[in-house]
Image 1 (cartoon, rainbow, N blue to C red):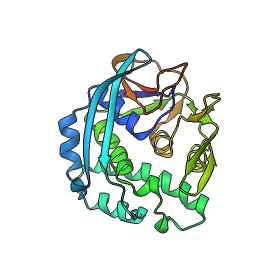
Image 2 (image 1 turned 90 degrees about the horizontal axis):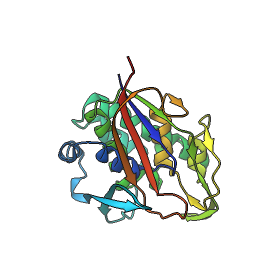
Image 3 (image 1 turned 30 degrees about the horizontal axis):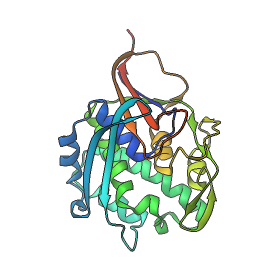
Length: 241
């Protein structure tokens, strides 16, 4: 069995996840080919490049797009994915991740699931990060996902409705029943998309599981911290026999 372990020593976001999957050997051309099955290719450009943060080399993934004046509803995205020619496994993983975010946003804002249309659900970068993660997990043959406890960060941040605490309300809602880790770093370490990826995919939480390590990937984030690289480490291997 192919096992993937998320080592979230510096948090997790959607772009860090894609970067780590590519760094661990995910096929860039296959990712681009599969994403073309969604009817949004004219709305973005993708880029990835090697980078070094605090002495550690990894891959930074970029989604370049112009912010839309209106966001897609969750129901629009669900329909888009269901009607695409993506594989059934990619559809299943993508929809599961999206639903985790939508359910959290619906509860926080007291609206129905169908009316959720907030940035994390509707923006192009979230669509690419979530569907791209599912595409690359299938591409790498991952069968089981585990994760470390998730650090969230601290402090406050500016969001669409004003000044909010870190972690964002959606992130905390998504991570109910998931082990989180104390962090004194001021800033957001884990985003709602990153939290939803962990919640939807991981089946257990703790230290690196017993395995034969085959691939290690590092996905770079946007931030710089004084005591650690802003990276997500991904460890892929097979069960010990």
